[in-house]
Image (cartoon, rainbow, N blue to C red; front, top):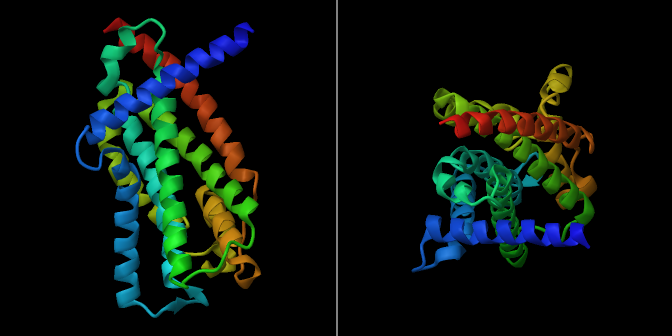
Length: 259
């Protein structure tokens, strides 16, 4: 019974922090919460429009629009997990004076919020493309879920490590945008693993993120495309990074308390 009460208490704290984050970020007027979904949609449909204009309707046998959707939606979730983690503590130092609110609550609230927004945006984008006849129903919904959640877990690990380091070293926060652009060629967002020359593929697949996007695309397109992925590789690295991130957060907490 005590564990159930503790779980409810933690969930209530996280829920309250999520509502606070929505109001702080988007305000009480206008579209408000809907920007959490609308922002990824605007960026994704914008990139789709540009690619559809400058490229042929099909690339390597794949429709441009669904290819961009699966890649760019994944990129947005990953980038938002990392970027919105950077200011999670500094923007909420005041609430940490409440004894029951911990640093981890701040991170979890932002991670869940970004995951929910990106997932709903992906569902809306998929529905629009399906109704437009640009994509079929998913061939393997379970594989899409697995790839999407693997990406979320890996993104949480990266975000936690970088944001904890940024609490101690200010330069990290300035380097993160550069790192996000630098990782694009190795992310799997705009290319498939099958397009990488075979002799370089193992090196390319050493980075966990392409595995997650390959799984999402395998679930969407099925056997019509060649995909390469290890379903447990990004989960392993996500777990390792989260464990390391928790250690760094514990160290950073001492640094904050000292201030």
